[in-house]
Image (cartoon, rainbow, N blue to C red):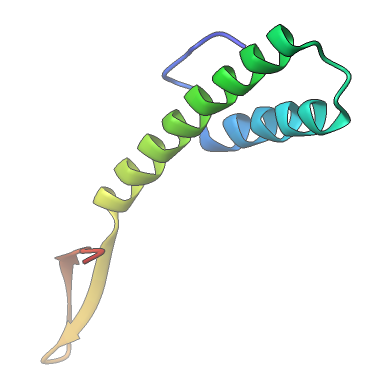
Length: 76
């Protein structure tokens, strides 16, 4: 898989799952295993960024005085 910033979260997770399964089998030599691990770490970092960006976009609808208003989401 190319390092493509437009990949979606589900595609990244599927590839991480594949890499994990391959590493768990233990059929790769050390160099191949290290390369797969590095690729997995890059994918995990990209997935984390996607989640962070999604979190920033979340809004919470709160009812105040009978009206729904939007309030920014804060994970803190």
